Image 1 (cartoon, helix red, strand yellow):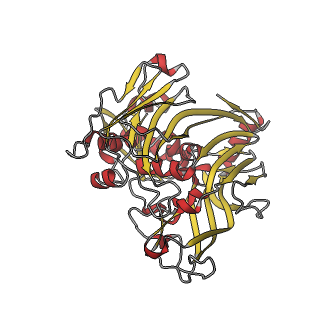
Image 2 (cartoon, rainbow, N blue to C red; image 1 turned 45 degrees about the vertical axis):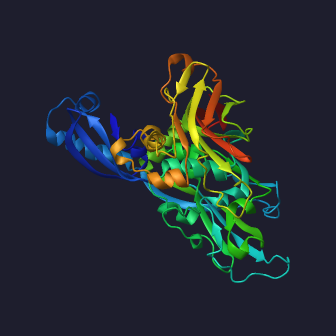
Image 3 (tube, rainbow, N blue to C red; image 1 turned 90 degrees about the horizontal axis):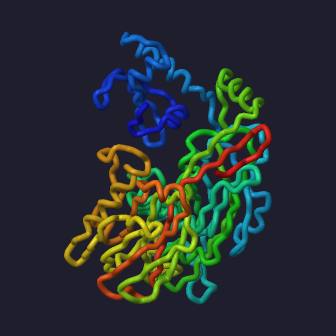
Length: 476
């Protein structure tokens, strides 16, 4: 089988919409159409696969019947309903550097992590410079919610199945921003989660009276939630949220006479909305029998690791990443000068810093990209950087290049969100089976400004196996 815009796992988890007979790359077979979060996608089943696993026939009607029956088997979901889970103790939701957890205790559940979303509600209050006079209503033209800003409320988010930590993300605000800029085709579907590039309005999540409500898909926060498109059977789960100490300065941008006002965020309600899945009788019986036989279920996903550094001023810098991972596939890099914890600028935007070159070296063996970029912003010689950014989606999601439109225009990419997106997914065998030592080489055409921070998101493969019968989870 080959996939066109989707995977076999996606096809099994979503509703079949149609079957067509046709040819792909010169081979005869069936195109099965199905809906997923990106819209309509297709999976291609070759004639050889059909003859091997169904019946040895050239009858077109048999092809069609096969597709219809295949679709019926895949459409085994009877219902999906979202249930809200809240922290056991809501008293510390606003404690700087505090933490709270949300637990799914019921072990007799089938959940769909990819469709889980986080709901945040509360109130923003603003006082004038004297610290006493309230600002009400808030002028939304002077207080801007930066793109993805609400996730800066958290310093870290951990996800557990049973007592095993499956995934974690540090600095989810900056990590989800960098990953989203590289992944999204449009951010309109995330405007209620605080994204405002295509829909530039902070009022999507915040009203002038200070009340806010944010709906954040966990698939844009944790690699596990994005990649695991199937279900989790009969396992206790938990998410732990760690509050950030200086979050307000990164959530909002204050302009004009608001820049000296004091802003406070009162987080009042946190709900993790988790889909509970019920199958038809046939598939329910199948899953129960598998669990009774102590079948193991595999979880394959990618983790997003965050590192940052404030390099010394100069025209060259080598960053030796202290923690290396065996299956590094992608490296996302962005620079910010005088932005972090600075509410008078847009903390969601990046700076080009007159970058000339950036390369990743793995195990002192292979450079990515192989050739120096030789960038020159003054001469508008930055096409290679934008091309690397555009190619990310096709590589990361294994989809056709022509179908993947970038979120950012070339101009916005260079002036607002310059990123270095490095694809390390094609590696020689010597790298695939060993621990990775990673160095990143930078060069600038003029000395790097002071107070510049380099953000790096390293995306690596991971997997785990769990047993619903014993509630055991094994990594590796």
